[in-house]
Image (cartoon, rainbow, N blue to C red):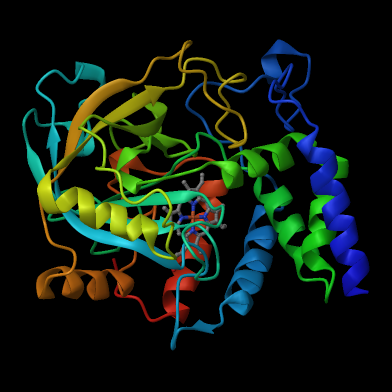
Length: 374
Ligand code: HEM
């Protein structure tokens, strides 16, 4: 049985290796009626009627998949940190007036930040293994009204990975995939076959993510993938945006090219920050087309030529010693912290189905591993 599964998986991967890089036309899985009055509006969300049930199902699956690793229960995904560091997030003086909301409101304002770099896998693997690379940023001591009423959060988190799109479009697809993965013995290869049959473009995104060769977390561009509101509290007068971060400093000094150790990404981070700071430009990309730049399908890239990202802040990660007692203590503290797109001001409220799904799943993952509130 197991052998068959491996063969099926290998066949699909072989088939995929022949799928060319160019995707002729990228079409959302969400079909809107021809009638123009039924088209989506800009900066709006369109929840599926059965979403609550899907979320409940996904929470159950996500929590059951969390098993102890290296002596403790870790994050449901992004289990391995490749480093946790301190930084400073400074708002630019030239933020356009219509983007001056939430933490971008005050020109030149600086926030202390904690930044956790991670590999996206559920398990703790060698850094050589393919994965999305995460950068989770937590701004501290942020004043304002939290997106989730009643929470005492004083943080603004930004969660990003080194790819502009997510390999699954909607909560329905994500939950379906994970329920297939739960099939005893053949779950993972079966999921690959299902994707190859019904969502080949998404399987290709997954393959692109896993195939990236990465030498340092500080030399990557990161994207939020999912959209966020940017505007005054409420649902009018603002816009849907995505975020990205582009490295703007001299790259990481090269290590030994013949030695890609299990923790080579952490070592690259350590090598870089021991002598030079790292700087990222933080950018906002507004939605300018409700169909080509959907809110409810995170597998569709928002074309940066159509809506060029606008720099609004700078994240500076200063010189620091990850291996010092303070560096190690921060790494330990970070493992118990809770990063979430929903640790946000109401001006930065997460939007779209995947983000609505994430609210419950992150909370459940954080509760199961006993993470600190925010
Ligand atoms: C565009 C989409 C997404 C991005 C950019 C993203 C990014 C990230 C990052 C960077 C982390 C690590 C945070 C940390 O260092 O603590 C994380 C954690 C996590 N993600 Fe996502 N993610 C996305 C979508 C999803 C979805 C759709 C799910 C499942 C519904 C999910 C489930 C989780 C879980 C369970 C954690 C661990 C939560 C914890 O215990 O703290 N993510 N994500």
